[in-house]
Structures are given as C-alpha cells and as structure tokens.
Length: 180
Image (cartoon, rainbow, N blue to C red; front, side, top):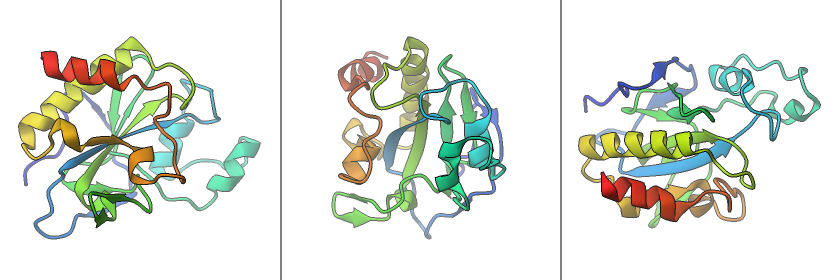
C-alpha cells in the first residue's frame, strides 16, 4: 500500500507506531478528542505526548501519562490545522483495547484522528471542515473506508472511552462528507 502522508498536513514523525499486520489495509476511521491539560487548547503538550517528549511534571494531570506511548495518525487543531504524526500505512497507537464488528485490536486496521477538544465542548467549524476534507481524501485512497466504517473512540471501546463525546455533531460531519 502506498498511502503515507496527507498533502494538507504538517508532518511530524512520532516514534510511537509500528507495522500493520501483513495484507492489512486501513478500513476504519476512528474519531477521538484530546486536550492537554484537559480543556486547554493551543499549547505544545499534545505534540509532546505524541512525540514521546511530554514533561510529566509540567502539570499535575500529566502524572498518569508517565511512560505512556501513544500516537494518532493526525491531530486537527481548533483552527483546522492538521498535523500528521504517523503515515497511514503504519499502525498508530490510538485505540487501545478495542473491537469493531467482531474484530479486535482496531489499531491494526484503523486510522486515528484526534480533534483538539473535549467530549463536552463544541468543536469548531474549521475542525469539521478539515476533518471532512481529510475523510474524503482518505475515502478516495481507501474504498473500504465507507461512512459506515467511521466511528468514535467510544464506539470501539464502550465504557472505557467517551470521545469524541456528546459535543461532536455526527449529523453535521456526515452531511459534509456526503455533499462533496
């Protein structure tokens, strides 16, 4: 598979990824949300986390992140800027213990996109627009990535994860990817 980098993204190469299983192409898009510290936007801490350089003493809430190795394929900032950390043909570490349609280990066959935000704060118009453009581009590259295979983290890890949360407007998002 020759699917690596989204042309509209700033590239940052996270060390937190590995190879997908043989002959396993992405067929699931998982939407997440993240803010570090919770509810604060625009800082460098998300980038630091995905790059493995987070100073866990910088904020009391970071103590639980000590030793965590995590990444997403992309982060969409509040202004709609996209930062890509892991090539799409590689396995980012975003889903954790997860299952979709009877298949475990969603990291094996998914693409993870983080929206800068919280599960209870509205996302920005710029984020919806950027996510829609990225989704449409991915769907052109990956025909198996249908709208039915776009989910929230909460859908693949129920009871453990709640993002992107009640603040994410799925109707708006799906309308944007259908009208293009």
